[in-house]
Each structure stands twice: as structure tokens, then as C-alpha cells.
Image (cartoon, rainbow, N blue to C red):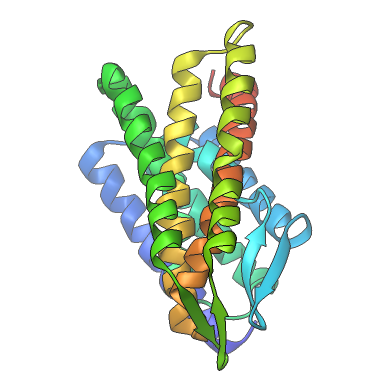
Length: 270
């Protein structure tokens, strides 16, 4: 590990320990050994999934679009043990990637992403517990935001320039992109109805659906393209279009996977 990476790891570690100490003093949160072990394992599992079971697709010569499920262990940590533990799992996973050499260069924006991936499910689960009747309303709002903003963005983008090359989005291309984004909706509804007639815990499924949509919109569609634009100069517009289509599918995949894995792991808390 380079000296700059080591310095970054030490700084983030000190900040993380300080936050943990502050949380423990102010909220009387109990940091039990069993929880620490499970969260540490989830962070390690996330790192392994990111390193060996993820596919990175380059956009304009830079690795900027990842396909994988390394977010799931961090999300589940936040849902199982609360937002603070989710944050710890996310930051710890980022530090493990740096320490192992999986990630070459640190960037505070991506560390923030990892922390938010753990925090968001924890906050959603707490919100759903306090305001269960408003859960459906928030889900409908986030679904409308994800798909509506994606469609409007595609419609209003006529061309994208990158590396001195201009890519024109004419009407047939826009129709194809919008159709691809919306194709997953009827499939999702069909699967949901099938499961609802069996053993689906509807409130739990809704919690995960809202968590995943917020993560996809805030982190994968907005923040990550922003960081990559700052680092590599890849146009923000083309990233948003590509990631919106990706998000349409990964909302479904991550929701169902997180739901079934979470149900299996709930007994670990007991």
C-alpha cells in the first residue's frame, strides 16, 4: 500500500472511531461483540464480491460502470443493526479494499457512497417502524422520481460529446432507451403478485424496495456520475442515461435478493 493510501486509511479510521465513540456517548448505543463480528464479516464479504464477482465496464476508456452485488452485505448490515452499523460496514469495506489493493486510489466521494449505502436501509427501516402507513406513498414517489426523471432526462438530451466525439440521441434511440427502462416494471409487478399469494412479508418487501430505490437514485444515478465526472471528465449526461437503465433492472434484482437474504439472516440477531 502506498504512503498516500496508508495516510487516507489512517485518517478515515480515526474519523470512524471518533464517530463510533460520539454515537456511543450520545445515544447509548451498545456495541456488542456479536454485532461487531457479523458486521465485519459483511464488510469482508462485500469486498470479496466487489473484487471477484463484479464486472467493471469502461465508459470512454475509464472503468466507471460496475455490475455486481457487493452493495448487498452493507445494506443488510444497516437493515439488521441500524444506520450507524450500516455506516461502519460501508466505511470498513472501503478501507479493506484500499488495504488489500483492490482499489488503487482513494477518493472521499466513493467512501461517502459506501457509508450511505449502509445508512439508508437503516434509516428506512426505522422510518417504516415509526410511520408504517406512509411507506407506500414514499415508494410510489421514489418510483415516479426514478422512472420519470430518467425519461425526462433522455427526452431532453439531444446529444452527448465525449473525447471530441458527438453521440446523437435521435427519436428512435430515445424510444429504445425509454422502452428498455420501462420494460422491467410489468415483470416486477407480475413476480410481486405471485409472491404475495404465497409467503411474502409485504411490509418487509416494501422496506427493501424503498431502500434500494433511494440508493439507486441518490448514489448510483446522481453521486457516482458526479464523482466520475470530477475524476475522469466523463460527461455526466451519458452516465445518467446508462445508469438509469441499469438502475431499472438492479432495483428489482437487489430488492428481491436483499429481501430473501434478510429473512434468512434475521435469526442471527436473536
